[in-house]
Image 1 (spheres, rainbow, N blue to C red):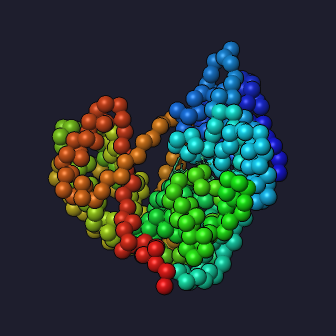
Image 2: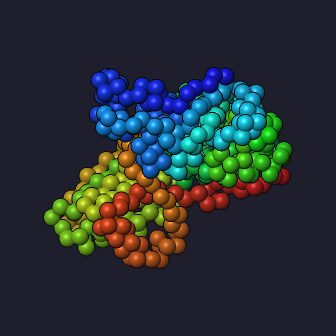
Image 3: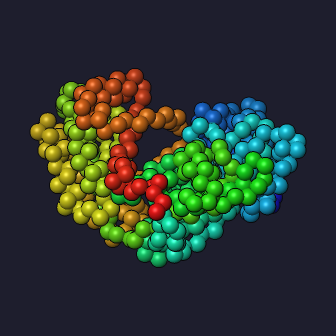
Length: 403
Ligand SMILES: Cc1cc2nc3c(=O)[nH]c(=O)nc-3n(C[C@H](O)[C@H](O)[C@H](O)COP(=O)(O)OP(=O)(O)OC[C@H]3O[C@@H](n4cnc5c(N)ncnc54)[C@H](O)[C@@H]3O)c2cc1C
């Protein structure tokens, strides 16, 4: 256990001639890796609130701001209990942090001590047996990130769920917040994969929770929100047999067509979406007032030719509207291969996101109204990023079931 003073940005005090600071200013700030290994740096710009960032003028003050003031680098349960005890005894604000991806700055806090779980990187693959689930599973330490779990699973012929941004931590805000994955239309949400949690509660006490043991804590952690019910030490999740995975990217722009035609093409994609997700496909797409991008479609167990067939009503409409598009459809032997080959890097530190759940009914029955809303958002300085999934019980199974 080690106590660290705030962020390394603070320690550097931003020496303007420092090579690392130059790198950060020239684009590094937008990369998750600049922030996730730091005990305090925050990716969401609103919550970072320009706390001593490298873009402040040389003469400006360097203040800690919203960052955790101190962090405890924990590597086992006892360290977490001691940190909680210390914060309680001294009445100090306490936060929990792995990577700093949180959109609402929940892993940061002005004046706080942060419990920094990032170095808890243990990964264990096991044969799991419980009244609810018998099969392969992965036990991951609180600091494990998506890319680490993907690689460990792939190496033994398995796949696990994680974020499209592979640096998101799995046991914190991701799975505790539900967690959507490129594999979700095949297996359900990340929280649906949870089998067992180990956690330390607010009094510093250790608990193991599953569907049959301390089930209230199990359900609270399986979707109740990161940092709410305790400090997670480890999470055990279902691991799935590796299967072939297809992928597709589509791009087009409004060049040479009216805005009405452009938005008709956008709307056609949303009309096609229910059939895609019902086939087990997951979609990430975004569009501005001038360009539309699907990046990517992920089809676990869906052959590339079938993926293209599912897209054809949409692509035919785009063609019919006189819009030229670029299409890439590829087949891969595994999720990791598809993910590495098709998922574009995701930038952080510039945009502040808000989220809405849009039910299938609205997409199916009120697509025109929905398109008008998207158009309004785009025309007023916003940008839409969509994540399309089918995570119904038909896909995830009855996660409540105990024989
Ligand atoms: C670029 C980017 C891409 C993303 N992509 C996806 C995606 O594809 N799918 C998706 O579902 N989400 C995605 N997210 C959202 C992401 O899942 C959340 O921001 C999540 O909260 C990040 O969890 P973290 O633990 O990595 O981050 P942190 O900021 O470290 O923590 C997030 C929250 O979890 C709590 N927490 C962290 N560790 C623990 C622990 N051990 N015990 C208890 N609480 C803990 C923190 O206190 C905080 O409340 C993305 C976010 C970003 C910035």
